Image 1 (cartoon, rainbow, N blue to C red):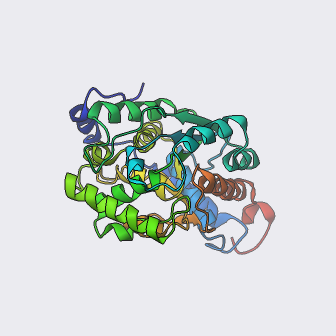
Image 2: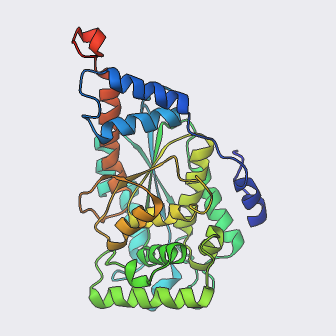
Image 3: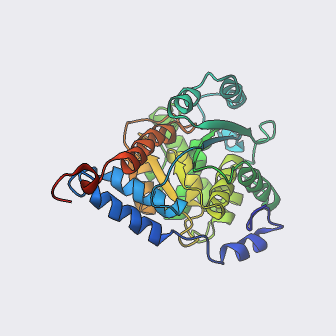
Length: 340
C-alpha cells in the first residue's frame, strides 16, 4: 500500500498531495547525459532518443536504465452523458471491447505483443454508468476515490515503465469537459470526432460540455472536484495509476487525448506529471492544444485516434530503441575512435 491511496476522503488525499512527491534523480540523469556525450556519435544526433534515455535514467535512478518489465493498463468505464446522444456507438460496445481485449483480439493486444508489454484490462462497474453531468455530478466523492484506488492497486510497483490507456463509449466528451474545465477556452476548442462523430455530433458534444461547465462552474485548481463533476471512472482510475506509479518511481507513457485529459486532472498539483511521457499526439483536435498546455512533447505523431493505449504501446517501441542505443553503443574510448 502506498502513501496516497486509498484515501478516506478528498481532504486526506489533498493533504497527501500537498507533501513532496518522489523526485527526479538528477545525479543519475546527469550520468546518463555524460554517457550520451561519450558515445560514438555527434552529441545530440539522436535527438529525442537521447532525451528519452536521460528521462528514464532520472526516474529509474540508474545511469543505464532498462525495461525488463513493461506494464500496460487499460481502464474501461461507462458514462451517463451518453443519454444526451453524444456517442455514435451504443454503450454495450464498451463491454464488448473489454471482452475483445481479454480474448486478445484488439489492436492493443497486438501492439503489446509486438513491443513486449504485459497487458491488463480493468473494467469499472460497466453496468452502472456515471451520472449525466448536465443533470448533476457524474460521481460522488466516494465513487471517485474508489475508482482512483482501483487504478492505483492495478499498478505493479516493480514495473520499469507503465503504459496507460482507456476504453469507454462517450468518454471523449468527458475528456473535452475535463480539458475545458482545466484550461478554459470554449468547448469547441476541445470537442472532436472521437470514435467517428460527424460535424453535427461534434457540435452536440461542445454544447453538452458548455452546459456542464455552466452547471458546475468548476475551479480549474481543483482536479478532484472536476472528476466529481464530469467523471468518469476510467479517468479517475488513470489518475490513481499515475499517482501510484509516481510513488513507486515508475515512469509513465500516456496514450491519446482521453488518457492525457484524465492525467491532466493532476496538473494543478505542482510537478505531479513530471514522470509522464506523452506517447503520441493523436488526430483528435484538442490533443495538441492539451499537450501544449501541459508542456508535454509527444514521442510520436502518427495520426492515430484509437485510444485503448495504442499510441503509448507504439511509443514503447521507440523508448526501447532509445535505451538499447544508450546501453549498447560503444564509447569513443571503447571503439578507439578519435573525437570523444
